[in-house]
Image (tube, rainbow, N blue to C red; front, side):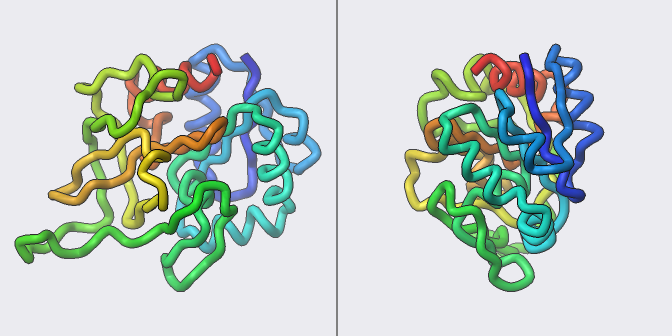
Length: 209
């Protein structure tokens, strides 16, 4: 099982690399677009602000590589901001254009609940998933609905098409989109590499695609 991890200077490469290796993957870390073009599976992690991540992805010319790879139909996974960059745009610290792979936007988690109480941000901690569309043939196939996954974020994706949402989690009454799918493209808001055995199950499912 071969997987290529995109190194554009802002992702949590060490933890993702270790998780992939623990699942038996032969991992290549691509620091140049040429090293990612012929990948069997491509993974884009992401940590930090959307604007910084997309700026670096563009500056290092990975944008075209990612878009071209996805068009081949081979499995793609975006993690955290790596998933958010699949959307059309984000409103984190201004407006920033995304990759436009999955129609939708990235917006801040509301700071107040429906009852008017303060909702803490960022959302940090463990949560189970709620299935919103079938998991067959996806990275969540084989996952347990009672399993807990680790989240740390203040912004979340809102796809235009609910059919692209694989799962949600509840954060103080707000439905956070936890995982998405469009054809061969997958994304998780949670960090599978930090989610213990539940996260490794997700990675194994991705590697099996």
